[in-house]
Amino acid sequence: MYVLICITLGVLFSWVFYPVFNDSSVKIVTPLPSFLARTFNSQVTTLDLWEPVQSLFAEANQSQLALTAKSALSYDETTDTPIFELSPNTKLPMASLTKIMTAIIALEHPKSPDEYVVTGDALVGEDSMGLTEGEVLSQKELLYGLLLHSGNDAAEVFASNFPGGRGEFIHAMNDKASALGLSDTHFTNPTGLEGDGNQYTTAYDLLKITRYALETFPEFDDIVATVSYSIPQTQTHKAFDLENETNLLTSYPGVKGVKTGYTPEAGLCLVTYLEYGGHKIIGVVLGSEDRRDDMKEILDYSLKKLDIPPPPHA
Image (cartoon, rainbow, N blue to C red):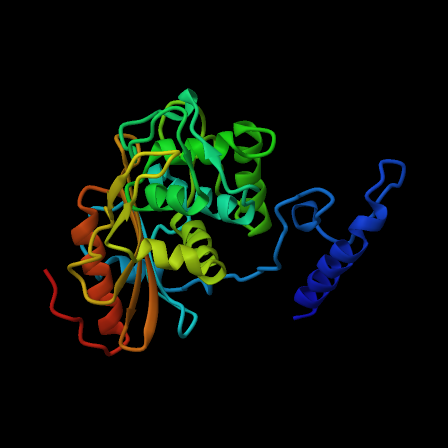
């Protein structure tokens, strides 16, 4: 408790006096670690020092379920307790689960005016919302393409329209990871595609990223829970019809999203948010051969551990 109070006071000190001392001629000494000080990390925009309670029974939990995943967990936000863990601190590639952080940076740094220009460099990757060079879309429109259809083009548009460009956007992603206390996560691109660096995370860190997105941005919650969304044609872009690719959203009662991911390197990945029986549960699966069945097993197991009969589901 003493440490938390000291960190909180330090963060408040940094925020209050940052404008006063934002001068290159003044040497600033802060009681905070550098990743929590605004003078060193511009992504420290809110104080979120939440840490999941780590289970002491991970090994026992592993024997309860036969999963294809390399790493997995489920966490009950309602009681702030872990339910299931399988190698939750193993660093693994995350594929398009990257886009949860991409959405966070986009939401925390809205462009003014709300006009995102599509450049040719943004038209990458197999999964796309179907953008065309020269089109102009709003943040909300791009977020639906990013999160429902896992649009790599939408991710790159957010990055290329960021102040300072794509490199600064990726830098902001890593700074945000540091600000959230994520020591086992690193980003080299905004999409999750392979081939341009060392991009990895853990199930434990993804739990923290997902919780932050859900707790901080109501629009994120609304979008990831949307089954389908149509964007009408305007003077600056064509029409788009988007379908949510998230497994179990329409087949497991209570599931509210969040995101799928896949590359040959990462395997099948999935983050799921469930509201059922008075509980809010986040599930994470990495490196799976069958993410849908793995997540169903994890959600069923989690509810049973809470003495809640799982719902009938497909």
